[in-house]
Length: 170
Image (cartoon, rainbow, N blue to C red; front, side):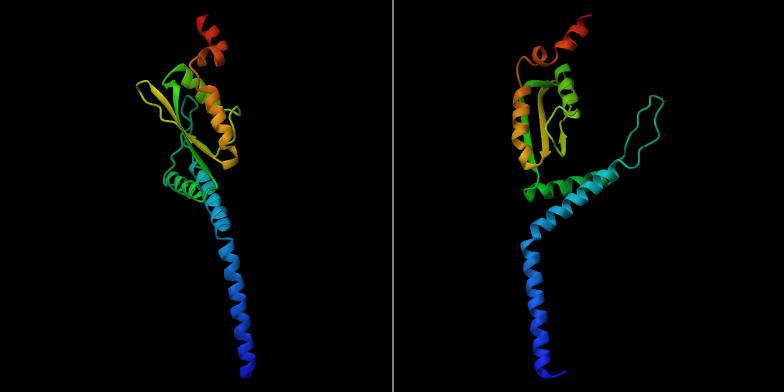
């Protein structure tokens, strides 16, 4: 191979590496988002893949093992990358543990609330204002703000639990 061909080959390799490096730099965030989404979903699935045998009452428990910390780590990375919004809500009118908070929790578990990746809400022994943390896509954050505002009202029982009030009186 002549010196001229070696120089051309070297320049071609360097140009290719520069182009590939530029593409990687441009897509680093997109790559990180895809990676952390994949790892978060994988940890979520692992967390619920090994249920214990059902009890006599038909209850099934899951032992998350190391999957829970991995799930939370990747979810937090997505928050840092801006792909996931983390919303904290401190309710003014809804106390836990109460019938109203149990009713609201059932709403969270149903299809009645906006789309979310996950949510958490501590459940204390003594009544205190309800706390809620929601992880959702940024496009859904406004819908969550509106959802919480709709249900954080002083007359929650009268507005949203009318059927339960009647059945409790019977």
